Image (cartoon, rainbow, N blue to C red; front, side, top):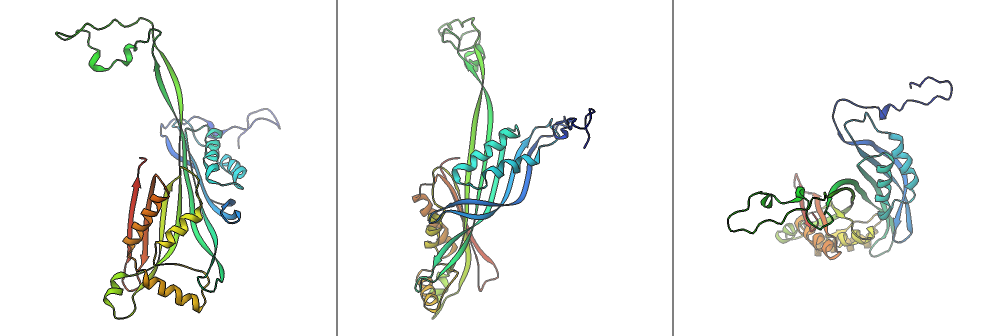
Length: 318
């Protein structure tokens, strides 16, 4: 790296902060696919240690050559032992401020483990669920016009329909505007959004196959993926349990013979198309009072050479 003249302790040039003359702003610059140990909240054990795959970005104005990549990791390292829902946006705001950016983005994907007992023998094992936190913080500046001392609107804020100098016939003459100028104030607004995604493995049994077959019915393994807009705290476990109830049967990591009999019969008594699963999960998320969410279900059909897929979105926010 180049150095400014001045000896052993001379200041190093900050190449990233030098001007760029190509006039091309960048929507996202940063670090991607960083593997890092993290700690998240756990309903039964308070906290859980896992490994996250981390993407962190900020926007870069057209006149800056580059960003300081090491600062992303520097800030993230301070927070990696408390990657909670409430803390995530605070971390992004710190990144945005440290890099002097208008916007900051982050996504952390991690395996989340829950100990689950078999339905009959209660044999325990761990189930893995893929989760992710994804958020954005941004600051936008607005210029607000402040009315003058007499409480009259500044000429610059008059609607076009009232700005004509000649009143129409029969209309009342306009009240003269004050000569005292209005003030313009720069106001910064902070905007943030935070999403949580959860992917749950499930099994479904085909209602059509059950209805037309003299015995048996084809079944398959698949997954449900939900993405919700965060507005108040919730436990990941509660969403997972609700989703598993909407399938023909949940999956288990340990099943003895008695458990396997129970699970196959339970699935046979609860046939589901992917359309059924999505609709049931949709209603479950509405009962949990989420303001925006998407639901996807996909199964690898056991006797058809295709996957079955369905999705739905609920929106009261955007």
